[in-house]
Image 1 (tube, rainbow, N blue to C red):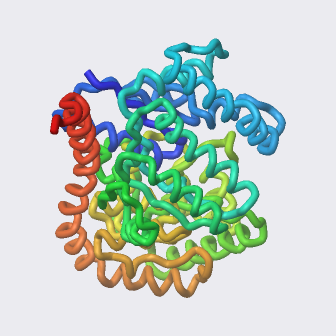
Image 2 (cartoon, rainbow, N blue to C red):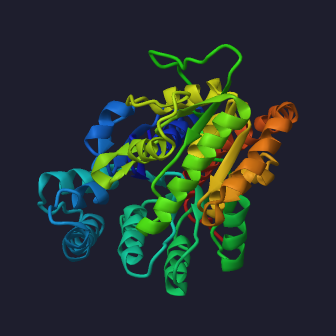
Length: 429
């Protein structure tokens, strides 16, 4: 029986991240090669994530950093000065000397998870990017180290469906490029990443894949969405994206004005769904939603779902709406995969790339030049072409779902082929 370690999981309280991990488990479990594998997830939200997943959850370098009080800079220093060198020394002693160095509990559990795994799979997502040349350096290094330490231990490393880039500096791009030359296989989540990897001229095999969240099973929550008879029900997600307060405030003002216009022009009802509720990282969509509702004057026809729901339940609620407006990329995936036309507010190229897979890239608008007029014009088109868009989705989704399903199979087949080749040994001349 093979043992798999899935690294780079963020938090199940980010329902997009949870959807990826759960979709990965679904895809891998349906392969004959890894269907009965022992799977462990290394999560930044350990141990809280244990309740969200049907397999064991181990710490991650992110969660170990989070045990240090004193702010981000001290945590970064802890990683650079303690965790990074200690993990390299531990891994080298384990591989070269077959010795397990003594270590404190959480660190020991993490390193044992790496050492006992037969293969390492970096979770799908879009974490290999930077927006700055200072803070971005350490975070990028943590993300890379979280799966590259598997190579130090001699394990094959696979990158599940990834969005890679953009980068704030050329040297950051070179660091990632050099790391990816050493992995077993890379799956690109959309065209933008495929083109970037092609320019890098890697010898590593690269395959196209779709986001694992397309495979997530939707489940009804304890209470469903209520709507007035005949009302158009619009789902919406909002988020904190901009580091600069003035730019974030402008985004929220635009969304509040847009929300009011939807209520006035379409006689609609709006439900704001929180995809991410991670208060420790100041990443809670409910805080942004409440500010937007306050700016809009707390209209009675707009409401926030305030409960802590699972990824499958959020996906179900997205599917109960008539139309969707999403800033969170995975909320758009939830809606679209449930057949609901969605207007996507793109904060990175990956959002447009996901829509391109469905042939709906015209339904994206950039968060960097967001205006009420742009949003309103695009939503009016969404409203006019609703029936046609639903038909296009129905035709496009089977191929995208098949591509998402294929992601686990590609890794399982490559791993099985590599094991067979290793078992055969060198051929005699």
